[in-house]
Length: 327
Picture 1 (cartoon, rainbow, N blue to C red):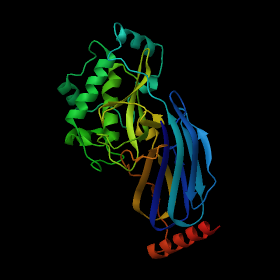
Picture 2: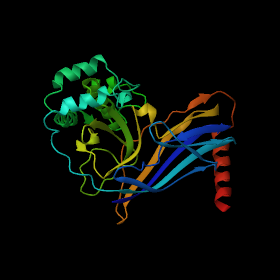
Picture 3: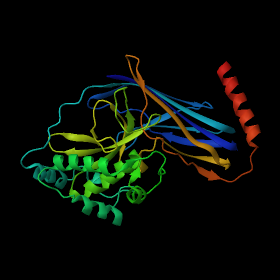
């Protein structure tokens, strides 16, 4: 399947700021059955966008806008091919745990076995582990399938019920959250069992027959676990799905802290009136459209310096935008 993705993020500041510095992780990865055929990132005000590759192989775009502005728009457009996934067995079979242990004992992906910023043990997490009776069992893949199903049954999907920096205890207490929370809880539960697990950010294509719980209009998050013979296998606890060709991978990391779609700072005395407005449209080349995921707020660092009023800032931003559109 071929997908066209358009991801628009807007930051509106209450008074004009003097500089924005930002990095972006929105470019779909090219590996395995997924290939990013085209990607373009543009900003308004215009900037020179540079790229580099981080330690996890994610393509990072970064830019600096030194001029005064009260509105920043970041637009990412991609064309991606995703082949159908190979059929996944229900279980690994005899010796699954011993083969997995041999892999991790050799130091494979050790960073995905350790606690991380948002995926770490808490008292409430251990209470859930006890409630689920979560143990290794006879087969790693069977255990992971069971955990995904149990989380789907026990947690309510509730957009805007948590924040980007919410600890997992918030979702554990209320038994409700968004895809980011479910991914972090899943990761924190399986790593101590010896299963390397990593966080995946990206998009989920939804067609008219979809029963996914994820809302339209933003990004999505799920988990990949490393298993012998199979490699990295995606688990989507939000929707109780094994990741398939509808899951479009943008970035991988230990948890959300490693791979936010946008991260940056700005200079000026201002707050963000609308912290994040994301419009993501994912469509096949046949022309159907859909949208994917959970909008995750972005809270830039705030400095303190006098700025112009919001009306003046909005007027100036609109004027600059009009001038750029006429060029």
